[in-house]
Length: 367
Ligand code: M6R
Image 1 (cartoon, rainbow, N blue to C red):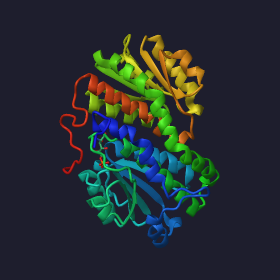
Image 2: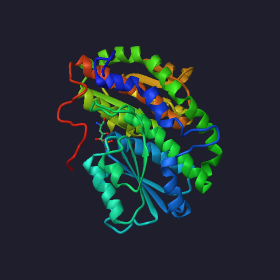
Image 3: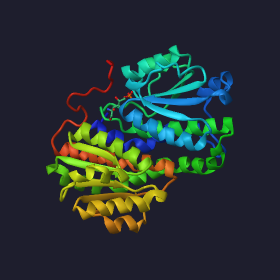
């Protein structure tokens, strides 16, 4: 039911506080996380024997996977690799029972991801699927499943799928850290607090950015190119923002690690070209600001996305959008909100069918 919204995409963007609350409900306590769905996994598998973790997904699910990798890299003492589903293989005999494979899929039907899951099983790897649909192939075929409980997502663009997958990955990361007594143990109390606060923070991010991003979308209407830059988690978020803009607004949007622009792409910067600079990670902000200055020296039109109260970014950009400050690992969720809204408004202002973009399908059942 669309109720108050003209499109499913906007409805699903707006639903994110509730969707994330559902994903976290009953799984988050003040001391830790409870994941009854994974009781069998922890009972049957000696987590101390996991040699490596592989995360696999396509499109937006691949982007959530990169965030998951960065999180697990910090929390665990186990190497983590992330692969695009269609590129995943254990051809060189490198994967086996010591490799935990985590597959991410909203629909639970994506052929590339299903095929990666089968490949992982063929090589004897234990598998966990993080998915939003209990009855689909991926949930049935994985050894263990963790559900995202985001509710049905009908627009082709993945929005609440992305934020709920990252939330579920947080829960899994905390559980794995506790079981393996990983180096991230000391970070757990702060992460738990931040997760309790997350649905409210998402609501605030929606309120704080919706009108300004609608106006910026009108400005992009006559543009053919847009760049997104960021460092660390902000770079991963830039990849997701670019995918949304390509998919829904048919805009040529490209994401770059902020420090990379000067190694080639800077040649594409002409006066007025729109750039979204993500600067949500406090520790990386200073360097991002120096990259923004390089763009401003070439007269790019820079919109900065940073946390409330930061004046260093607002001083160097043309427009600034503030989002609530939260744990660094949750910033890719809070900053995804204005990027999803930008894709939505940029698509509607161009008159496109944002719920059913051309050449795409919600469930991709061919490889
Ligand atoms: O259902 P899945 O999560 O397996 O789908 C994977 C991708 O096809 C999907 O995320 C796609 O990239 C989205 N339409 C992007 O918004």
